Length: 296
Image 1 (cartoon, rainbow, N blue to C red):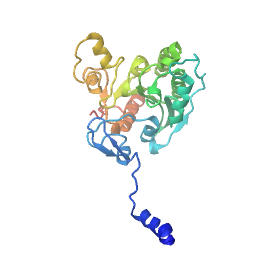
Image 2 (cartoon, rainbow, N blue to C red; image 1 turned 90 degrees about the vertical axis):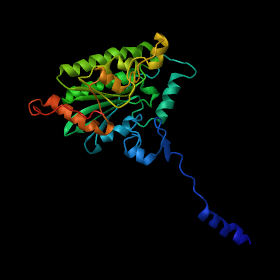
Image 3 (cartoon, helix red, strand yellow; image 1 turned 180 degrees about the horizontal axis):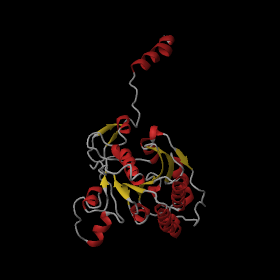
């Protein structure tokens, strides 16, 4: 009896027992509310396979789809003082940073800088990470963008920025706001060197980021249905006490009103960027070719 109880019965239970599914096997699209198989969603570059909704994509998931054969070099951000103002709200700022860095898969900040071949041409990409403290711009992000600009100039490469931010990081106060000027100067140097500066506006691009380098591109591309503006629509509506137009501050609305140059599906971004860079850096060989991009 002991043999049956202690050996045979557990073996039978293990064979017939139902295994629990992993917690991350499925996710729900926030727009159409359809359930998505996570593996299919990731293979589709985090775009809903039912309605085409573009969910927020972190830089380390985005970069392999941009560079030739998914190969690129990551560039560590310059070291800056952590918590220079010794800021504290309900939690110390340095504790918030450590918590965000523990969950982060990039460089430990809200910006990732990478370089590599795109269409056979070396390009520099700087991508903000909304998953790291809302992509907020602090001293480290400012230093990183300045570094990316200098890297592009040194390599005579285009600078491509992916914006995704709630604005300046309040825990660094005036030091954060100073980065608006510093990044604007860095962008100007890229342009003075005769190099393309292209901005891809993703959801959301707001606050100080939209008031500085994100709106200074030679060309502005937006992902579909992204929120782009300074203050959010709810803040504006509560301030002016008026109903806002349908789709206000969304990519398609801004395209219709001339604020962005194209709205491009995530699957078409790489080929669009390669075509734009070729047209901007090789005007003679590109002469006669259409500037048309894949607008949604």
